[in-house]
Length: 327
Image: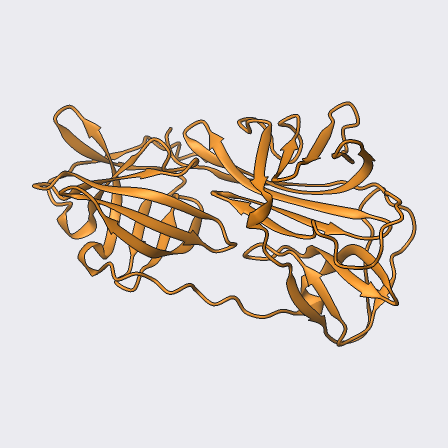
């Protein structure tokens, strides 16, 4: 079946690394992002945490990485060896003058379908999110494999964190105490973080509405109806707000800019929750039937998906998948 399955697998591994670095804000600490992926570096005096999140093609669907590592060893020139639950499968981060390159085995937290490497431009760094501890004191928890308990942080004290949207229970955090930079994991529920407002959207009244995914069949089109998932769709509001429904999971975003092209063509700049961005080509492929193609990015829309406006779907047959009633 062709229904999208959006799979999240989390791998949390640990290790310790000692250095003579100072407690000043390290040049590498921050968030690096590109289409469909983000890499966060939280550098401390005795430990450095790396958080990697990405989506990638997985057959007919889209898979995802959500991995937290600790730097086990820093080799010259600029190669960081990351701790892993599979010692025979090494993950590394190459620190180059203008780029960070992550390499891994394509197993564990990523799984089948991941291409095994990713890279991020260093000039694209963004600051970590500044939050404050609420309630009583909380403790920076070491990653699995790191011995002992981490230091505590007092209520009201500021910590720098990286948290995706929606945030997980535990997020990597960095705090400076008494001249020392410390890192570890904290519960997101123990923090007060600023709410991220939605970016200003572009005026897309002319294409606003709900669009249902269709597939070509002969000289016409068909709408697939699945047993365990909804038919994928795109909901686009006039103010640019966007909801992409993959069938079992969905993601919200904003069309931040529209650039007109040739007749029936436009380029949409899209920003998703969590900070990832992509550029999509909106092309009218069948004006009579109200069929458009969304194509672009490196993940779900990479090959181009066809959609029909929901209020114009009359006459397009629905093909229902045969379901096992015993399940």
